[in-house]
Length: 427
Ligand SMILES: [Cu+2]
Image (cartoon, rainbow, N blue to C red):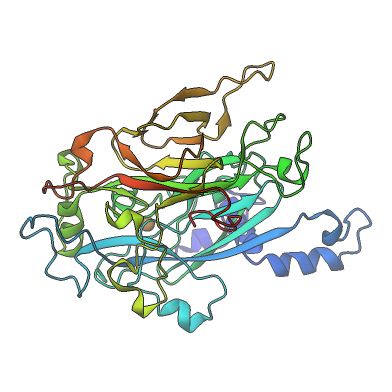
């Protein structure tokens, strides 16, 4: 530094000072308890106690890292890309992903490094309840040379604060070894999706995608003669989105060659995109119908890090809600034979006219493009097993092998009164 600089008068306000101030604001928000205690002790009569004005808060803690998962064993090998020779048994494919580490102590959180899951945890919130989601970047155990950040981008959420939007070029990403707390106040019910936005073409393809949905306030104020406890997909005003059971689906494709290149320190030309697997909730048929798993259960086997089942179960006559989200790079069209599907919402918006009239779509197929969501209802037909599948038969394969695979699952209908009330989605 020159003496000239040393003698400069400090300017009252500069762009750099503003940037520093911005960072201080982030720190204050991230340390919510500290901020709160300062506000509580202020002498200003204009500041009311926080407890009187702050809505209830849901707090979650996620970790971002890499890991290994398993595609169906019947797929033909595609040497050297799949199965990946670096994969520890019983796994065969390298991924990036999120884990829900809420409530874990620091040492246990750190122990999840290298144990990512696909698709990301299914999360849901109540309209009007604030959300604090802390993301910890645990780094990549297979690629310690790669110092990528991670973020959470709630796709479709009308975020008033860019800091919490998760687009790193415009706000903040979380470096390795650091935490950042995102804040959301969900005003709009519906089905959304979330994903990491850091090097997003790569990180999304590698598995950092999940479904998030917001329950409407109408659940607390049932319409007509509906009893308390009635569940609705939206604030529809007439009960037309009432449902008994809900199942969420993250639709993606998996390009095994790109996953191999990430594991083996090679780069990918994304314009060559040519997926080998088509997945529902990170699994390919027939794995889609296996029960929900648990990433912290060592006995969970080859689907341990693909814990989200896509099996649909219901009693005859039940109203069933399908929450569909597509974070692949291809269009998908889900169809079912012999069941009429009603699409009530697209991209977390109920299909209504300005006068509130309903413009739901009926048919046996639902089109859904990349980055889009759909809320689809049907009434469970006579007992039996039905299929929900992508009507592009090219997507009903595992690695181009014989037999059915890919984006397909089963709808298993039981006689009336067989299944008790559903308490958790996708069960
Ligand atoms: Cu990421």
